[in-house]
Every structure is written in C-alpha cells, then in structure tokens.
Image 1 (cartoon, rainbow, N blue to C red):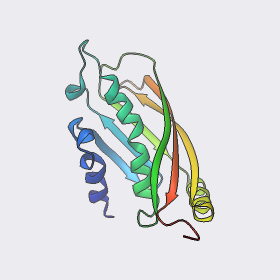
Image 2 (cartoon, helix red, strand yellow):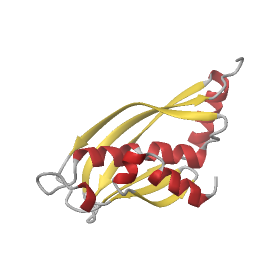
Image 3 (cartoon, rainbow, N blue to C red):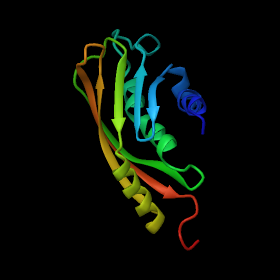
Image 4 (tube, one colour):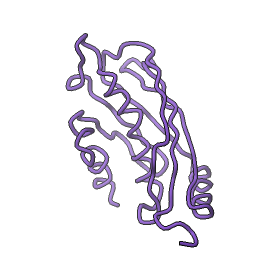
Length: 150
C-alpha cells in the first residue's frame, strides 16, 4: 500500500478515530509516531478525554500491522490492553512504537507455522514537554487469513 494510502487508512479508516483528528506523523515498516490533538478531545475538566488517550495507545497496533505485515495473508487482533493515566494531559499527545525487523520476522514466521502469533509492547504517551502522561501494555495476535492446512 502506498504511504499516503496507509496514512489515510490509519487516520480515517475507522470513523471514530477520524473524529479524534489523530495524525500519523511518521510511518515506516516497524515504526509509527502518532499525535492526538488536545482541542477536539477535551473533557469536562479541560484535559484530554481518557478515551482519546486510550485510542492513541491502541491505534499503533493497526499502523504497525499495515506497514509491516502482508494484509493479504494476515490480520491483527488486539487481545488486551491496560492503560495507566499518570498525569492530566493538557497538550497534544504523542506516541511512538517500534517493532524491530527481527521481531516482526519472528512473529510472521510463527503465524505462518501455527496460524497465529501473540506479541506485545508497551507505549508511553507523552505531552508537548516530553512528560509521560499515560503508559499502556498492549497484547496483539497476528493471524493468517487462511491458516496452514486449511
């Protein structure tokens, strides 16, 4: 998929996510940097809505999948996610996730062999001053669209 098509799919492919005005700042195989703007996601006390922070922590899973794995052979599932809110988010918030080529190859090999592969990562959501406002632990599964032997 062309990089601009990927960017559009991530920012606008899920209508809910599109309404948050989330932006893909950088995207390459195994790496994504995304930003959630404060303004459209302000809650009743003037800080970023917790659901917007959760969304920002979860969306890199799709971005990494689309930029790293073959969508004609695999699809991702989120198996679980925990988030801890550490301080109020009062600015735009950024998240970066990196999956090494070696880890991606290991995940893909396991999915090819067993029809699925579990993997996980942790995220730090940072404000404009580089302060961590939330952390998440994300658990995913890569599945073959047609498992081996099917």
